[in-house]
Image (cartoon, rainbow, N blue to C red; front, side, top):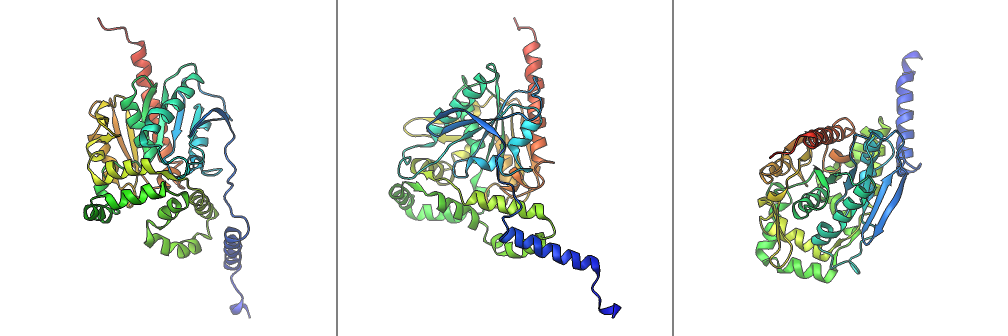
Length: 373
C-alpha cells in the first residue's frame, strides 16, 4: 500500500502547477496590469507627458528622466506591469520620472505624420515640458528601440532642447545584421521599392493589429515553442505574469503612420543611411548622428536575434564620434525582455541608472569648473 502512495511533495507540486495554469489561462492571470500612478502635465497632438507620482523622497541631485517608447507599442510598454516597470524603477530610485505617450494613432487620420514630426515636435515638446517641471533642469532621455533612435536624432538636430544624455535599449543601428533584413531587402530590390510604397500609401500606414501580429509572429520558432514554455513556467508564476503582460501589450499596438513607415523603410532597409548614422527626412534635409554631443548608451539583449542583435546595437559606437562617451552593454533577454524582462531590474535598469549618475557627476564637475580664458 505504501509503495503505491504518491509522494506528498510531488502531489502538492502537481496541484500547484495545474492551479497556476488555470489561473494563467482562465482565472484572470498573475500580472497586475494596473499602472504606476501618474499625472498628465502636458497634452497636445500625440504628445501626452506623464509625471509619475513619487512614492519615495526625490533626490535633489538627480536630473529628471523622460522615457520615450517607439511608435507601434503602447506607451505602457515602459510601465509594463506592477513589479516589472522601468518607470517605477527610476521613480523608486528617487529620480523625477516622466513618460511621453503618443496616444491613439490611426492610419486614417495620421498617415501624413513622418519621423520629423516626432523629432521636431513630439520629443522636443516633451523634453521642454519635463525641464520646465524641474526648474529648467537638463533632461536625461531613455528610449526603447525606435524611441532611442528618434531621441538621438532629436539631440543631433536641436541643440536648444535641454537633453543631457540619451540612453537606448535594444536600438538597432545596422539593419543588415537583422534576420528579417535579407528577404525584405530582396523584395525591395525586385520591386525597386515601388510595390511596398504603393501598398503603404493605400493603407495609410500599418494598422495596430497588424503591428501586434508582426511582433508576435516575427519569431515563429519561439511561437511554436510557447505551449511547452508555458507548461514549464507553471512552476514560476512570475514568468507567467511576464507572458500575460507582453501578450496584453501586443493586443494594444498602435498604428505606424504611412509617412513614418516609409521613412523607416527607406532609411533603415532600402538604403544604408541609418547604418551610416544619417536620416533623410525629405527634400534636402538630412540629419547625422555625428552631431550628437552628449553621452550615449545602448543596451542590447543577449537573445535578441530578430529585431536588434548585439552587432546592430554595438554599431552605435561607430556613429557618434563627438559624443563624450558611448557605452555599449549587453543584458539578458530578447527585444522585449532586455527592456522589461524578468532580469531587467538587476541588469538593464541599473546599467542605465549608473550611466545617468555618471553623466550627472560629469555635468556637475563641468559646471563647477572656472571659465576658460
